[in-house]
Amino acid sequence: MTMLRDIMTNNVDTCTPNDNVYEVAMKMKQDHVGAIPICEDDKLIGMITDRDIVVRGVAEKRPNSTPVQEVMSDQLFTATPDMDVQEAAKLMAEKQIRRLPIVEGQKLIGIVSLGDLAVHTATEHQAAIALTEISEQPQYHH
Image (tube, rainbow, N blue to C red):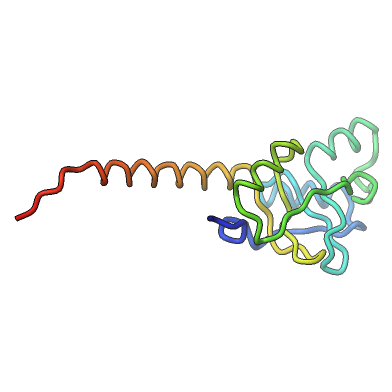
């Protein structure tokens, strides 16, 4: 059974609640990501997505200097590094979330995206196919 610790991204760029929307947008551009966890003293307190910036920022005519705290989501679903991949996939599907922060206590230690799960599942599937093909090869004994 594969655990989230095996597939999660460990080096997660974060922002603080006092950073502004512009700073978060620049970090998203630089890191090529659509979401940034918000941490205060290593404790995960929220998440801001590109959609949050558009819907709660731009559409509400907030300036780029708006603190992240006013735009971020603080209703978070998280997982532990010991959660298995299938359980995480089910949680993400049920809650309609694309990214799952991984925490130990309240400390952010990683993140898993739908893409991570898809790559893992595809790899697992390819391994199963290869195993089946190997098993079906006629065995020759000399």
